Image 1: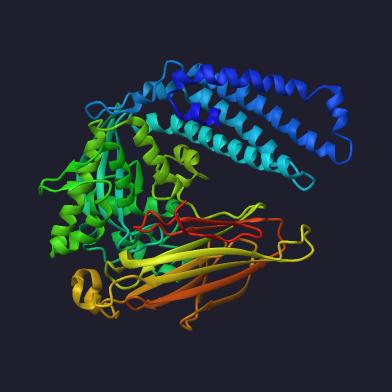
Image 2 (image 1 turned 90 degrees about the horizontal axis):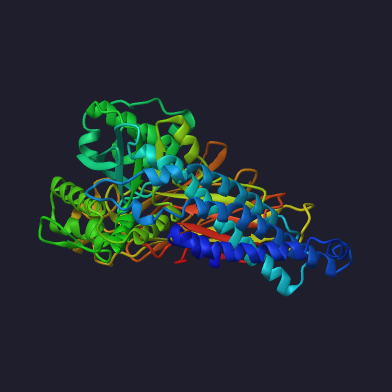
Length: 551
């Protein structure tokens, strides 16, 4: 815990703490690596306990002396405040100097974490088993943090224009009208970087960027068209309907180029919940309308109240763009604390509310496999992963009122072998929380006014459920009696359900799958909503259920 806190704080002050911990780890490693200890590890019952302790001691020594201490020594002259913009400019030199030591530290930490993760926990008794579980969590967390630091030091200097001007497309999703990765991409901001200077040079609405596009800007694969038709390549609003940002990023770049003539070096996407996290760090920002945008009111203001205040869509777009720009300008002015900003962005990335795609293949390789890449969930030997992606079918902003409750549950977890298939159940209940009189009390722009076949106040949700690779479908049912359409994408089977939800009513979808697998953990990536208390990542271990509630 102390090492984790030290890495999260100012690197210039962390080295003494890391050095002290490294000394203790070295002593423990020496104690557990002599011949007598090694001989004792071969004895029944007590042997596995001693072996587990020895592995943790050895890995701690590797992590602290081989990874953290060299990194902290290299970073003694570095402060996280160097990342704070000063008059719109960030000094990239300190980050660039940490690139090599950060990569070496990340590699060493990954090896140490892997060693702890491979400890056989079956013969371990209570206190030792609990210590191994806790150690595994800490090693994994620190390894992930160092991996993120390494990738950041490799990417950020170039992205900030260290080697020349860069253009990036910053997309802001609107969670009031769901698309798979969050919501319609309602606002596009052209962001320019040059020698660390950051500026916002243009803003376009999704409506203007879709105008005149009668044909798809690219030919989408048949499997994509089978699920989403050609809409993601014809309407800027629908870019993130495809739940893989390595597909959406190039699509956004091409659509923007076709409509504006400007090529961009990458695409970044956020949502209003991310803006609310940033506002926790910067404090309130003033808008030209005289209002103040805060971390508490940003989401309801941008995703609900704006439609009451501004009936015309053009005025709504202008307000949304102006508010988004004001938040980013506060950041560029250096308003607020650097640590608070980093915490806000880290939380947003963990919740899969921030994605990034780079046009440079080498830079995209650094992003691949991270949460920022926004790729489809990947099933491993340890973890089976679903994708639960929600899309609005109302043609309005009713998603703001719909709550998805997702649960995972394992069956047949008692058999540690692979002789029998394990079953895994995903259950999702969608509830329309709009008031019973929503048809008359909500603005028609929110209800859709029946324009696309859904009665005012009701909400239509299209759910695409991506099954884990290697699992077979046992059953798939919906409480409203609806059936599903079958498809596939990137090797995953995709079940598509349509649910019509009246005000204050709900519907439940249940999917049961099975596989002969050593996996004992399960996760589901769920479309991030306007409700920050709902975790977009649901998890469960064999024998336990987990729900999408605030972590």
